[in-house]
Image 1 (cartoon, rainbow, N blue to C red):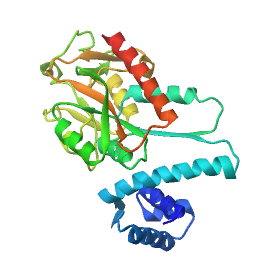
Image 2 (image 1 turned 90 degrees about the horizontal axis):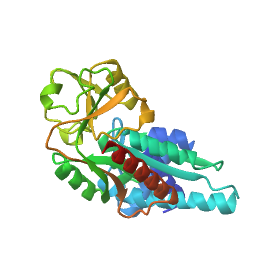
Image 3 (image 1 turned 90 degrees about the vertical axis):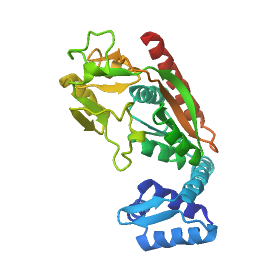
Image 4 (image 1 turned 135 degrees about the vertical axis):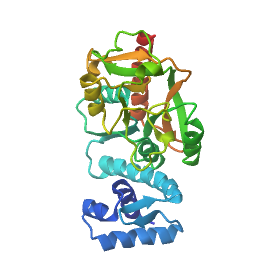
Amino acid sequence: MTLQQLKYAVEVADKGSITEAAKSLFIAQPSLSAAIRDLEEETGTTLFMRNSRGVLITPEGAEFLSHARQLVQQAALIEDKYITHSAVKQRFSVSTQHYSFTSSAFVTLVRTCGEGDYEFTLREGKTYDAIHDVKTLRSEMGVIYLCRFNEAVIGKLLRESNLVFSELFSANPHIFIGRHNPLADRPSVTLEDLEPLPCITYEQGDQNALYFSEEILPTLNHSKSIKVTDKGTIIDLMVGTNGYTISSGVCPAFLRGDDIVSIPLDVDEVIRLGVITHRDYRPTPLGEKYLAILHQIVDGATEKKG
């Protein structure tokens, strides 16, 4: 087993395709395929399952890659410091569901890093992808939520993925709506109040089981439903229509100033938002810093809301 083989495996995992990984690595696809096959034979582990769209990481492969990625990252740090004698580039990545407070913390992290070289990644997307990114250490940590409906299924997936959920805060559900929505001046709203309004949710792609929904109460039927994939669109829809989405109520003001308002939803539910990390991976100093910033933003927002 060589470091180069580990680099190849990590690149295939990141690209999700041997063809794309070969292009990124500037090597021939047959050579990369042979290197991966040799690594699988040597370790007795099937890392990837091939299909028409690329590759899928096997459960055994995910565990192997979590260790391989750490070795590759450490080797890069040693090379930067002792061989190329360049300043060590700071690296950090986080995968999260669509939350404004996570991107707010990310912005603050970038601002605090001064003039040094860095490579930061914020992956904001589908629930399953966030979990998978942390499982394979593509991201150092993730941010998701648990509730009464999804906790058994998501909790089982986290345990099987060797991940730990650490709660940031719990909140009663709120709706986000535009300032000019007819419900904007209400102290609270009920599900009956929401029936005539469009419900805006995040589309979950292939992993569209209700347990992966980013919004609670996914089993409710809606006469008007809009699905989107990015936060910018959902904000535009809340401002430009009477649509609503259900979330925790934590929304930094800088997101759209006073355009978006948060109103308590009168339901017997609790949203638990938290950070997921790999059980075998210790957060980097940048990861620790991001967590600290995250707590500061969340604590300030929840105190203000309360």
